Image 1 (tube, rainbow, N blue to C red):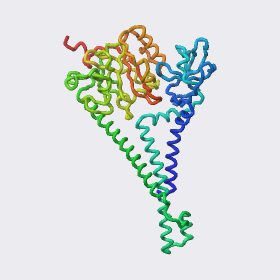
Image 2: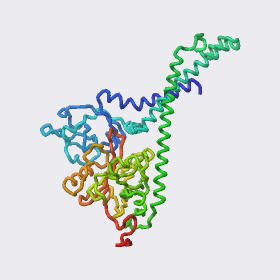
Image 3: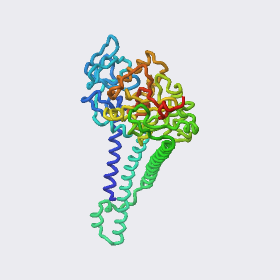
Image 4: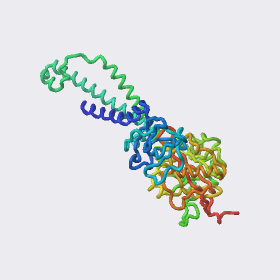
Length: 449
């Protein structure tokens, strides 16, 4: 590679990193908040995947038709102001793509600011490096760009020295030396800063190869985790031929699973997707955060229920946690349900347990905060639970299909995973548990009574 190509490619990589980072870091230094839009409620004015830049503002100064960003049950929402009720200290808001105003007014203390600017597709670009591994790739790219520029400089220095040596030996003339490389015309000693470049080059090489080592280690862990779960599927899961949907479509050998690990709580399965995993119950919420079914360390961990919930999914709503893995394993595809077409192809999951199997009819999916009130345990089907269901239905990214209506008398599960659209963001899906005529995939009628 010639010095010119090294320079061009190195500068390209540095500019690429700056182009991804500066649109976020500089506005934040200037006092703006930056968010990624992941729903279409403000289309066409603010398309899905846009980045919005939010400026602080006094609530009383907000005007009708301003687009404001505000907190709603831990989620960040950007909607247009219909009315600013200064006497009540609240806003009436509406998404441009929605047919009706938002269900609840927005209190002044939930206001983040007014949307000063939106940039289409920039939010989607931001999400590429929002994850920890994405940041590692960013460091690798920057280190590679700087190293290429240093390498180009060293190549020019070496070429210049070689040409000077040839001139001194009389192999070429001074004019040819200057014509071949203008830098060779300068009869100067090697730059005194050469050792500095060498040290910088070594440091950047350490960053590059260290980051590469992290990426390779993560990929190795993904492969190990995938093999471990595939082994469980091969040993304990079998298909069921039942077209009527009255029993679960797979069969789970819970007796054998419990013999190996009594912490098994159930098995979550979604046809034609990556979701096909055991659901564990640990002594606390850290037990299976980074441990697999065999209780061995595994960064991907397991799907697990909130340790504060009752056994057998007896609560009005039970939370199931899972990591958002970059290889789409575990709950890495959970935010795919934000797409209406994907949801309509996968409106139902299955939850199998040792005592009862369920269809998990998906009723809502949306982004929220890890600190949201949605993570409170709901034991009973009371008014607070009905309000909880109304809130999540109003926030849903998808429109439920027929049969997915909210029913406060049913039990539900909330599937939760990390999202990278803002700090401590989570993507959650709520599913209604509808009992079917099977237990662990075995028809209930065939089981001993």
